[in-house]
Image 1 (spheres, rainbow, N blue to C red):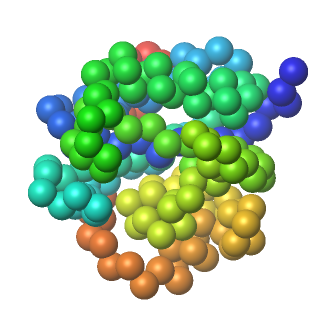
Image 2: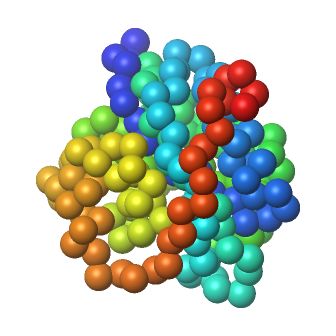
Length: 174
């Protein structure tokens, strides 16, 4: 059995009611077996990066404590994406919901379909701002810097605008 581990999950949406998709994703994550929700960052609005001809994103980061293995957690996150209508047709294209395992404790995993820590988390302001809000001292297991140190050292000036605190208690439905 996997020991309970603290995990950071990035959440983003740029289709339809973006905030509602993010809120529903957090609610579904909070219901994963062997998992408890620890914190959710504020909601942030960001412009798209790789494929810029699409709507902006709403992003947040959830911290959970889970006894699911990294592979089980990936599967659960993919089920949430599927249940919320995610279609994987265009890489970096529009999506109803995107869930990324950013960090899984201090584990380092390099597999064909699972890389932890997320390979670009340290380069993305839309990940680091919400992460630093809820876990500023979380240490990147490869870079050996905290989320806050990485954010403060960023040269990327991508615009990230804090919208609002996340609605209280996702388990209760808001």
